[in-house]
Length: 569
Ligand code: AHR
Image (tube, rainbow, N blue to C red):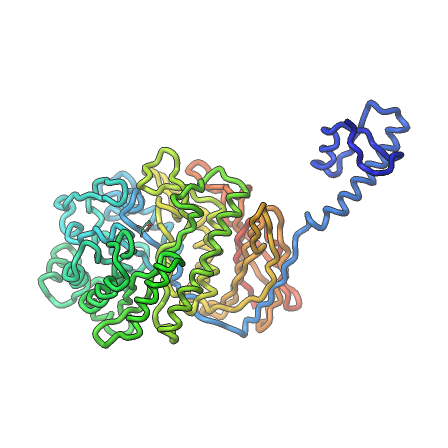
């Protein structure tokens, strides 16, 4: 059957279906239908030229970069973007600790006191503000005494939460503190509320923080560390509504008060300005069981007396899609890309929901919302131990990370901490290792690009994001945040969610005299592009510069990209 390109019978062109489709796939190519007589062929050729031009005219606006205007008034500032929103989480789970951090002093993998040097060097560049440890669900099974003293005398226990493997306890308190010292980070220690006791947790804190020569402090000295450690954050249990003991809100609240009262930090340097902040277990979703939980904890906080206090409420929210995790972390297309991004944007509503409850009981926002587990959680990689939560990390994760960090930034008045799950080899990791090999993930590069936003002051950005639609998913085309660092320099982040089209950004910059702008952009050939040990540079930031003239910054951002620029005055 011939294909009719026009309703005018005189202008009917006879081409096969295959030839017709070649017009669409190669918009400037001419189609020659060789079976036609020469005159008809000439006529057809000129008609095709015309037709092609019309098609080009119609589609040109769609193929050209979309324009998005941003308005940034650097004179208007908001809350501080607490550096702790860039926190990390390292649990005794799979190869997160063992192999990912700890290889032991006798390993052939280059290490310092058993901690691998390549990982430390990579993490130093991220200026990791704090590391949450030892769990997760593992925390409520952890007994700290198993993890102190000579390595060869440590108890071998089991890790029933994560694969039932042997936990050698060779990475314990002093190894964790050594690791923090090497990467330049602070301790966020989650104590065991589920299967432990207040006494056990109190003694652990005394062991770590007492400067006076108590028996526990002397034991620490015997184990090689005379100086008191600092513990900046104390997690009072983990998911106590589930793996942490299936507690009711009221039961947890009574435990929380006891732990808050008796688990003391004795470090002399943490008695005044740098006091340890206590984080209570908070919600794991938006359903009534979790709004009731937030209500119960915050109501208790409102009525708290001199004898106990909390400074933060934890929140866990993973981007899973469906439970159990079934989205794959490799080999996916635009459908899965857009769906996962849609799920991840639900973080904003969840924060708003719990922040509104917190506002009722704590209008001065003294209690921080700490999203201390977040990230993409996908199906385990085929062939991996399902209890080890092994997944790849793609460009999609980089975009997911940027969107979440931007959400935290916009809630900076309440969200003053967050810990991506997890640091190495587990879930949405910064780093993947395999014995001596190491590769940095797309998420790693986003955290690196965002370093200037640590402790920067949020600057509101107004924009009409436009939309990007794929199938039945519609997302904002772009996202953007701005902030001023301690030196007054303005930083701008722009995420282009659309995997197919670039965006022309035109930012009106008020409140500063901008001269130039430059930075880095992160993108890759496909939404599922990953870095592997053999091809570690597939998703790598590259330099980008913007045009700045008359208070306007113009920058074309590539499809599916994360861009950070600083503005020179
Ligand atoms: O990060 C993996 C697990 O997810 C944590 O151990 C737990 O707290 C959460 O359910």
